[in-house]
Image (cartoon, rainbow, N blue to C red):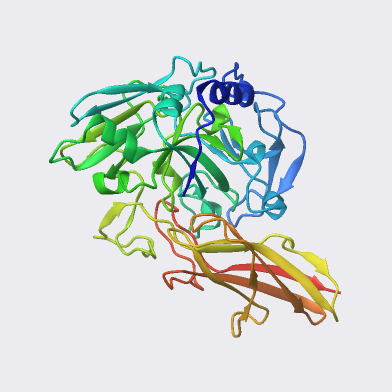
Length: 413
């Protein structure tokens, strides 16, 4: 995490308001004529194709999963452009359909309350003015990224591999904000709630909690900027929580309420929603298995992908062929990325690109010489703690935490 010099209140407001022109205007969510173009997304249980849409505000070409609430997937070719995901193609995931379509950052506030010495309320401009700024590169990944590959199939958004993105986040440390409110002795957790609401009044608002020690670790932050732009409204404008190394269910968008709790959070979104079998890092069980202990989902696990070759690509044989991709270590950095061309019997090292921080994507490259015919390339990441991607996929009823070694079939000509 890097600290930033404060350019001054006037300069901050001008820069934020200039880039936020894409953030607090009216957002009309398209309902019809969303797209005519299709993209192949062959999932085991279907569909084989999905629509591409440009109909959502401040977003480029995205894979349409759902319109209400918006679920937009990043086309996988985008990840080959570099380690930082373009803001206009950064995936979108909302839980409830009632989300604000316009926000005025001068009046939208986040309240810090609960088991604290004094209740505080801040606009995004208050945060900019009162606290030291920090910057952190971190992957935001949906807990159910790649759920569409689970077999047997499970309920939920049937994502391919595009429910993830990497950004440079700018904001303030949550620790500093909590310290300003004065966390009382006996505090256990800190709960977060955004502005989205269910359309049915009896359904529970989305609330997520972290332990007090985690919330005050100096890395969790409240961010207003990603990759040099203010947050788009679909990605949480004007401010959102950033929880590096943890799944995106905790990265509360349009952050409105921070509540310090003196007892464990038992709300629906902590349990039973978003829970995994208690065997991290596997999060694995057998379909139909009984008496399994579940715990709230938490830390991410390592993943790696080939980005410059799509499944079914034709590549020339008889000469070294460039292969590149991205990897991330989950809740820590990338130690190594290896590639196999013989079904995982032998593994060859790759060259790692620039390290932007332990929570971000890391690009890797190598050259392989392939024999003619059908070949399968495999890639695996080992993180800085020695945790390595498994060769067999996990399964759980939530469709969470897939991180099996990826295989890319190609034809060598």
